[in-house]
Image (cartoon, rainbow, N blue to C red; front, side):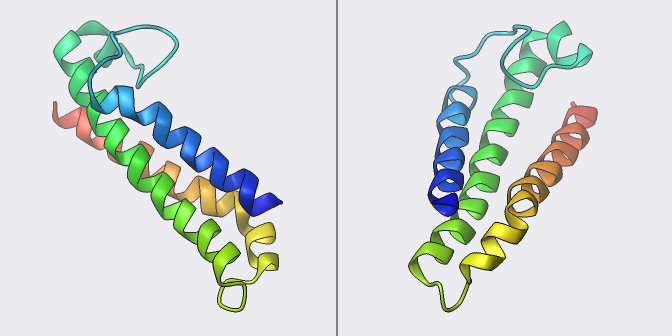
Length: 108
């Protein structure tokens, strides 16, 4: 049950990343990588959000690999591991992504 829900959450993140990658999301106050710098310049907005979108796909796929692997190969990744470490499996890649995004934004 939990791996299925968490896998669905990863798929949702990937779906949310696609418009960012395709640069279909204009600057706004709701959706995207919103900072003073990104909201001040449309070119920076699209570059930063494209970077965020690709990173979101990669981080979601890495989490999905663990959740899916746990479902397909419970002898290798036991369900108890997924239940006990679900937050870390989701959050560590996202935290790495956010740090990477701010570093990238600083270089723009």
